[in-house]
Length: 304
Image (cartoon, rainbow, N blue to C red; front, side, top):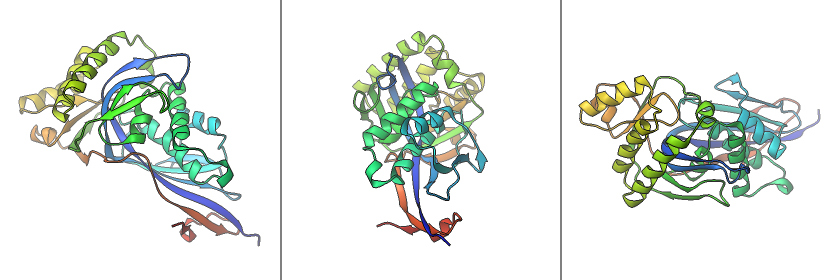
């Protein structure tokens, strides 16, 4: 029996909740993006990426075969159609957590980790590829760069790493959220974004002068109202939180309400609880295993 080597890597990408943003479109996906602020969370997407002679190419999310335009785009851009990706997440797709961006960024980093040593790319090139893939798909303008950084990122200038600029809020609060369904990011970004961009620019200017978690939450709620993006359910939940003395906002873009500390719990809701994630995308483990014709990840030997 012929023995062949298959390479395997495990990648984690944090979820990302956008509080407010302004959209900036150019003819180049690398310079297209958003300004604004959000936070990355410890609930994210874990991807197992495999590559080798016996690996059957394909993408699954939570055990089901899936096609995500941005992921397809990054696979084409990086010429990595011979990988197998098994992704797991507790986050709902299309609900404002950046799952599409996480999948795209994770595939880019995972494929690089299992690539031949003569065919690897620098970190900035991988982030750029994932960012451009999301922009082309119309599913995000700033999730990828925020998820690559981690923490509580402020997107000061739009675009990929070589043109964009990031800052951050020095806080790692507990995060609560309740999700009630999806909002089409593509439909919002492809519509007239003048109103939301004006609101987002004003919010960013205020946050930069007072970069605190409390200020972020106030501005995120205000943005949802001024940009006319609030869903009826989000309005209802946020009103309950305010009545209980707290602050909440709608995740951009999804029918999801989030709060810091215990503001949703205090209002009588049973939210999902997580933390602000202190880091960005990470390769958690990688290595080679030998197989005589069948993928058997339990025989993996991790590199040091």
